[in-house]
View 1 (tube, one colour):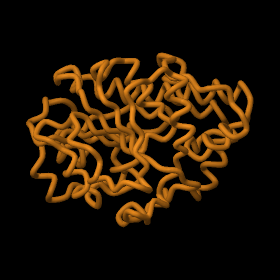
View 2 (tube, one colour):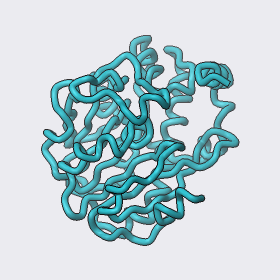
View 3 (tube, one colour):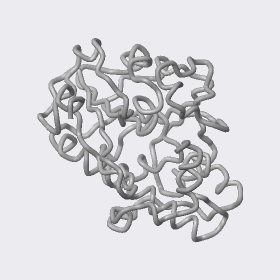
View 4 (tube, one colour):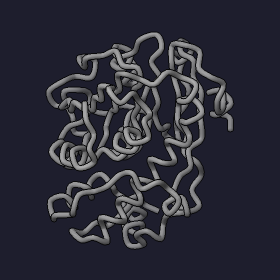
Length: 269
């Protein structure tokens, strides 16, 4: 079935596509009242739902956002609780900020931590698999679909402090003020955009104990340069009914706790 048709059917089904994790998740992320502008901006980022400027759409988006973030948090909790809380954090491709809001309220990092967010304004994201291996190279930011004004509005609405937004249209990733203790990206680097393609840029932001986390593309294959890192893979519940678990890659220059699976085992599995 063509991907655009799948997306259309998902939007028609609305919340019926989700499993019970949507009802079980802590409701920590809150969306501001939906204006037409907010609903339209969120529609580009949250592609599974058909969003309208009404309360029903706002509550449905909140449920989706909290369930996705809860599942990511639960998957990462075994490694996070074995490591010091980070003081400097970077999220690559935060979208509308659901995970940073959820993680901030779950105290994944120190209360005084610096939170850096890397994204830019865009009207579309090149999600097709053909863009995975060779995504646009900076300063081409056509793979982004963010809305920085919306991101700032949502962070303020949820009381997130000590954050700094870096516009990817103005700043190349290696020029960010790293290094960071925790770098993560869900459905961005590693998922829509090849990790191998961006590893040079990412390495500039790592110190010896940085933990890097990303969602893996279903076609991901290990590559030689990963041998220089400690790497583990943990499963993350996918909230869509009947879908297999997502895989999250954990990577560091320091030996990681033995959580999840070794990279080679995860790829075979």
